[in-house]
Image 1 (cartoon, rainbow, N blue to C red):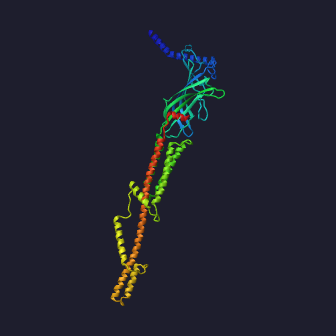
Image 2: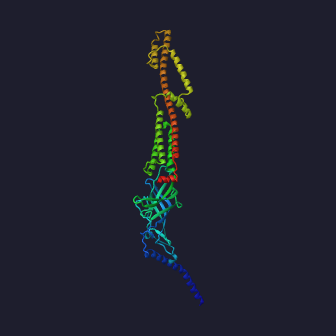
Image 3: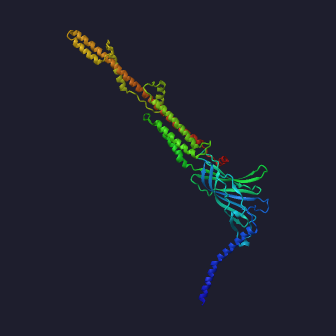
Length: 495
């Protein structure tokens, strides 16, 4: 009989142990219901009345702002979209109780629409319309009347973006929070910022978050209004733009150097320069699409514009070089000062080799042939019909010799043959003189063309050095003139 009693008692004890927490929770739940009923129903709580017993009491609202992430920075529309964690705390004198009267309940959670809420508004809101971000949230009410409101909020605000140093820029965007209807005699706002929870989106990194309390007065009558100005200091991560915008420009600018190295006879020097110029124009249009239409030109736009100017000048210089290179036979010879300085001193400094039109051996042979021709000319004593060709003269002399063969003596034959040979020699020398002058004219024309080609080569080398110096100078001027703004300077620019 004792065994069944022991089993029944053990089951009863286990049942009591299991039901005690539920009974305590039900009792606590009932106490919470009774507390909420007493605070809001019995006391006649009105969420539209400022919760102070003395109307001169100022409600101090403490604000804590966490910047979690930058969702979008629209440079063209000058807007910033951020994910914020916002917390507000203030004291409500109508919501206080003694925890001992309500089973030890020290805090309750109610909807924000059921309690009085300060109308804290973002002044520089940039959305399509204002939305009450503080409504339809959960408030924690403590026994001493302290109310805690906390929620994540996605906010789109205006931000004055300075794109002068793009893509190596630092921006200071302001978030201006403050009560809209309540003056400084009713509600004051104090705020702090925290950047410890910030998560970078890969484009922007936070450098700091500052909060500044400000007080403004209306004109008539002078009523004070308080607001907190949060300044979010952001630095752009420029590596993406360096690889996608800066490096292509540098490479394209380097390709322009090949236009000077390319031989003039290839016919592609001007085409290469125009292709480079069109490529830079396309990249500049991509930059212009993302920048705001303002008078501030970003540093990368200045670099592209400078590079385009240099490429345009290089095309003009290439045309000058081609004009010098393709001088025809009717052109004037190279001036003496050009031959002395450009083909002499400058060519030696630039290591441009000077090619002679004739070798030393060819010049000696030509001189010897000229001397022999002149000596043969001195031997000739008379001239007969210089317009007759040597071949026709030989035929005529043969016919005359046959006709006069029978009637002439041997002495006359000898005199006639000598005269015929001298006349034939004279005519042959006339034709040789003509051929020599013709080929000497060709050689002189070729020599003039080669000299102009060499002048074009030296000038092309000079233009190459000037272009490289201009490109390096442009890059150094832009880099040295690009000053990274400090937080104070960025904040001042934001104001």
